[in-house]
Image 1 (tube, rainbow, N blue to C red):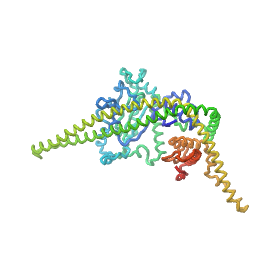
Image 2 (image 1 turned 60 degrees about the vertical axis):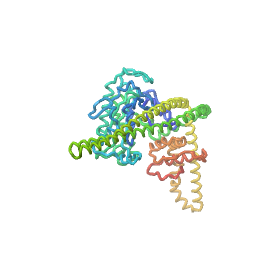
Image 3 (image 1 turned 90 degrees about the horizontal axis):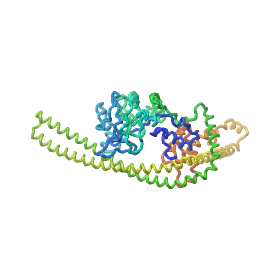
Image 4 (image 1 turned 120 degrees about the vertical axis):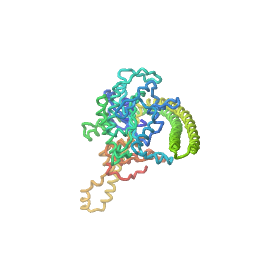
Length: 562
């Protein structure tokens, strides 16, 4: 149940749909997917913001090897025998081989220079600070693996085993047509001049597109908010724009056998009123919970047997990830040094060219020009030596990073194998948590109602009969926004959010609350406190869930201690 990722992060959509539904069944009582639903060909679109593109990222996109070192890949699913099948789409919607000579950062610099636009992160780089402005939108476009293989390879059988030889595989025109349609769409949407790179990878498990977009307005200004989000800069507006983008792409993908999937939050809710849908969920939950008591002992045993192995593997992965982080930082640092040295080399070469021009024009004497050029030439040779040294060190650092990635991949494989054994038990286990949370919520509501009535009785004890009659006419205020009222109206949704908070799925809790018109969130640092017992934490989760489920215009500053 760990890592409730979004649907669009999956590269293999058929598996992702099944996994996500299995993962969500603990938090939502949705029916299992039918065989037809599992095998529908779905489109994939993922958007990631970036504050620039590193040389390492560029090398990954363009499949550039460094001094014989293999291209880095965390997934280790790149097939070098299919490298020549990769291609780019360039201006004018032209299909061309991947240009490995010109890095994407250099393409961006040339693009901006030609348009007279300055990189807003340049000032931070000069000061040695990390970039702060989002200047890149990294798009991944693709779809279900089987359908993407049909588009890319037709009836040819691709061997996906590691180390397999697929050099005989040929690229089909359908994948080029699909890529060109995607390119035209992105050009129309964001402006062709803002597409810094459009690379199609056919050498991985699932064919896909990497489209690098510069979020530049018609006024030639970088603005992630205006281009990608909207003037209001709200999460709702961004979600709306993203949904519209998915829908627009779906119209193009339809002719290639790819369709838009239904958002998970809407699944099962069509053609039914909200009340009917909630009632159906409650009935299904109660039926499922009847079976929990008999299975809990078996489930607990299965979980405990594998927890220790998962813990050990997780510790190993964490340790490897720390090493990868350091190795990646080393690679990044060396790459940056090389970039700076290359820029300095270019500046020195320009100085030499200027001195020659001044000498030839008679601005300075040949002796003076020779003297200055000697000094610059010595400096230039020193810079070239530094570049060679840094490139050699970069090659070693990259090789180490590749080795660490390979170790991590093997460990993660074993980790996933153990976790798979828990996939049938863990959802049921978490349903039990939801059952307990539901019961706790109703008890809390009843207790809250009792306390409110006690206060009401105390208040009316000294009133005259006429005063009590007047108050009774307005006694609806008594339960306004109370726990009792909220549980009566939104029991299932509140329980679901509270369970997600209790289990640590904060992003999921926020997403569920927002999908039902709620606002707010648990904030950073949410979790069970060291000195907090389970009952107190459950109560805090339930109160926070009620806070999050309130409509946005009613959400006030949280009074729940985090």
